[in-house]
Length: 221
Image (tube, rainbow, N blue to C red):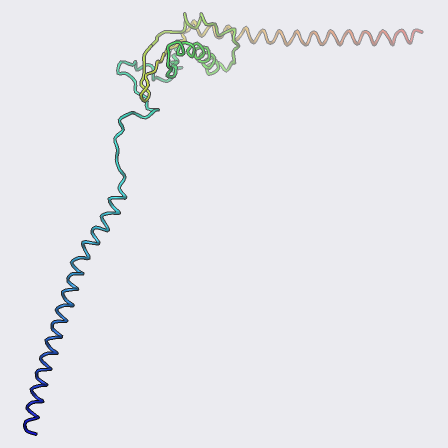
């Protein structure tokens, strides 16, 4: 009995020491695994967070060719082309500019349409009169109204186009001519209206005379 008790005590001590050692080794292994997970986690998060940001950023590309509708004018283009119509000065001014065209012939053809249209619009703006085509004489517009002219090119995208600009001026003599044409038109319209009324009156008189003649012959018989 005396020999069994020391032996049991020794076994108990050895088992206790072994269990403590195993517990410490398991704790160290757990700590090492946790440290590895903690050290690896920021790397995975940083790489995962870096990828969406880099993919979300728009890729900036430089255009080697200008947009198709981007217009570039030469440096020697006159500034008067961009001025608004002036209807307050002693001499009224109205600028007419063609759009970009492939050939100069197209610019000339467009300008021949724009000039009388601009004159008609000027007359309507200043007098309220809608003039007829007889007033818009091409020779009068070219010789008396066109003051300045510009012929040049512009760059639209990768294309080089032509343009023409003219400045129409309406001085006192030009405005008198316009008012005189307007008065003549008004008088002509009144004369035509009076002629129409006179014709209607004449027709009514003839009809009335015929009816009275029929009645007079019937009563006379």
